[in-house]
Image (tube, rainbow, N blue to C red; front, side, top):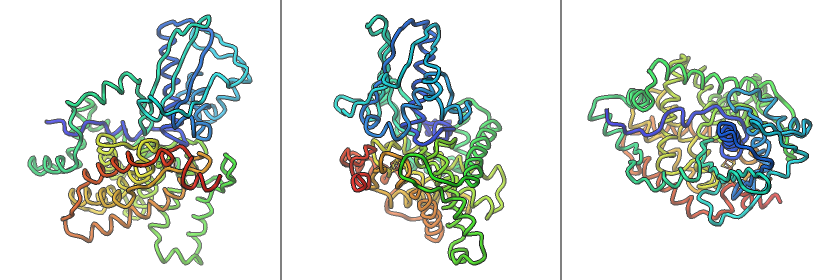
Length: 452
Ligand code: SF4
């Protein structure tokens, strides 16, 4: 079978820790990778320096990037380690006063070994972190990692090779649909077959792994719906998911009659986004900042449509294709294209899975993904104080409703449309390139500027 989907479902849907895939999850993975390298090569050093550059330099502090770096440096894993230990990584290290990596025991009195640079000049990517190990004042190891979005990490040298490699064809939803038609295969069947040939993992295992992804999504909703109180960070933002659900469930609430499905999906999206903002464990869909929308829509549909575990896995497989095409053709990084690449793409994924579960055709799935993204073109990333709270949390909740609404409109239309998903994604990328740096995860413009 020709490989026309270049990325795995699980490259996109990953277990992550909040609040940001690019600024929290990826830096933790970078530090863990750096630590492994030092240990594997038996490198002896007496000093360490980490420099957060570009967008990291602007919003790293509020995205909890330094704590994520320290968590990775001390060997904590974003998937396996207890969330409590990850959250207290900095405090624990400073209490201990010693950083142990392999044969090295470095005295650590404060966090000053992590530095910030707001300079974008000469950076290969706006999210860059340089890791340096010294011995007697001389650099022993000096490498830079990039965070291109969704929790993915790349060594700077690999990024250069990847961008220079023009032999790889960019994924195209239009070509995928033509392939399905010519080979008389459904979109879902193609996604699974391509995943099998790309990864060598059996169908049974792929579906089991998707069930695990859903389990983490569902747990995030259930855990968050037990929580109340104020989110950390200084904005005094109240957690509202639990309260909103109680209100919607009461017989006196008028909204119950107006839009119960959209209301519920929004509340579940709110729950995951609040869990993410508090540094909890979520799934990147496609990113941590936009992690609430897809599970919000899916959890509501699960009850409304009486869905099985297999339905949930299939819906997530469909959503992953949408996100992966964007990663391949454009970007899901707020620092590169603004929030159109995060909540905009999440809405696209949510609308596509909604249409799939409603019995829509493969063409209608593509149309839903396109239509949802179309209405987010130009959306900036301007989180107040750099926290993934305002506008991020509500954006997920409102986006869940938009995804359902979009799907409903597409299900009521014929299978003709003027703009393809591929064109819309390319437009998003061009728009992102034209956007001032102020609106790309720097907290220098938009709402962030107004609040300051
Ligand atoms: S505004 Fe959007 S892109 Fe920016 S941090 Fe929030 S969710 Fe992410």
